[in-house]
Image (cartoon, rainbow, N blue to C red; front, side):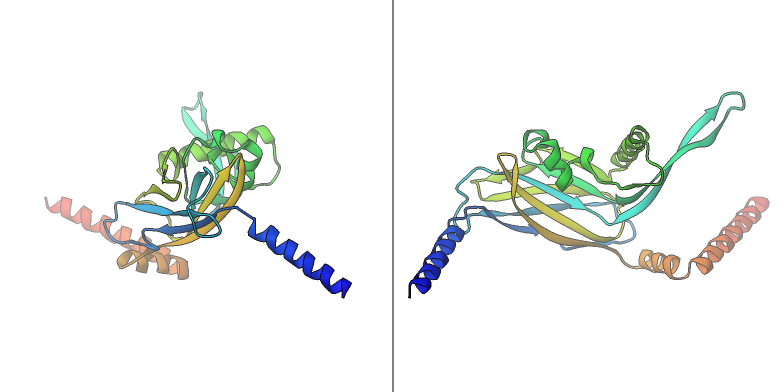
Amino acid sequence: MTGVRIRIALAITAFLALTAQRDPILVPEVSQHEIQVRQGFTGTELLLFGAILDPDGSRASADYDIVVVLKGPTEAVRLREKERLKWAGIWVNADSSSFRSVPSFYAVASSSPIKNIVDDRTAAIYELGLDFLQLSPTGPINPAEQARFAAGLVDLRQREGLYQQVPGGVTIRDKVLYQARIAIPSNVRTGQYTAETFAITQGRVIASATAEVEVKKLGFERLVAEQAEESSVLYGLFAVMLSLVMGWGAGRLFALV
């Protein structure tokens, strides 16, 4: 009987410890789970929102910062640096670098600047911010050179609207409801996107949750994309023939004029 009582006491202690856990629960949602890219698509805006609740379903009892990250499919990227030959007046390929897992799209919005929320180590673990993207360089690695190429890649995609960082882009109401708006540009790549939300307090990520968004092409754009992937050789030949026909047609037209 004594052994049974000990086990019951241990079970009760474990239960009380679990019920005493006060880490919040995140309930995330997005305004649309499917973004359709049609002819004339000029971009859209995605609303990421949700609630922060205590385990018993009541309003969160502590103050939390929220960071929202929207990430697109990863891809391999090879960067080449151009160098100008002054004596020849031309540009040629110089150094190059390859990365194995570059997000095709990356946007991060936060309730406060990330540097004020977490330390660099935590930011690197969860990839919170453009400075902490894990691009996975390949080949011989020179740290200084890789950092230079990575910074160049991030800057290029920022100018294209594909990489975004918005401090203060998350608003929190009554310690419960949060929301963030992220611009989706017209040149966005299709595929499965992940929207991940992090609740952070005292520099520690204490809860996270994920929602999915699919970006897909429809209509003629979808047909072209499918043919380019499934029949790349025929698609290439068709593109060349179409260019020749259009060039010939334009020449005939100007000859008549």
